Length: 195
Ligand SMILES: [Zn+2]
Image (cartoon, rainbow, N blue to C red):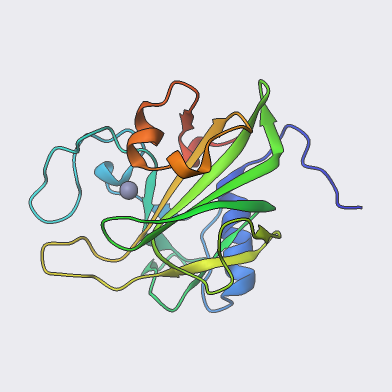
């Protein structure tokens, strides 16, 4: 039987741990290691690449690209890095986004007020094993970061969203406007995610 996380999970340190397990050449300065420009943060109103522009809606997650490794050296995620899920999940949807693909996962073991944790790994190239209905174990590969697409586009990065929503979420409706406007979706800041 798998151990249960109960009601306590600190997503990002666990994500970092599984990321370094899968990609032994990278490491993170504890406890989180990520370096986020102000506009890479949750709720930011502006873009962080090129000429800063107002976002259509406040940023629905965090953009992960730069980090400090265990030796204190600033580093950058590259497209060779395998992105992983730190908790078990079920793939609800794989959709296109403006840079690549978005993988929508439901994590039934983490609950809050009768709703379930969900995550979105966006702007990535989904792994060949990732499709709707597939189960992903702890440390399971989700995909890889894609290269910069054009001169005006942001550098390849992982956009990570976390949210709580009911189990009955209609998978065909999952898109970015649903995420930012549906009353049943409660977005949370992945860097503050201790629940
Ligand atoms: Zn983003």
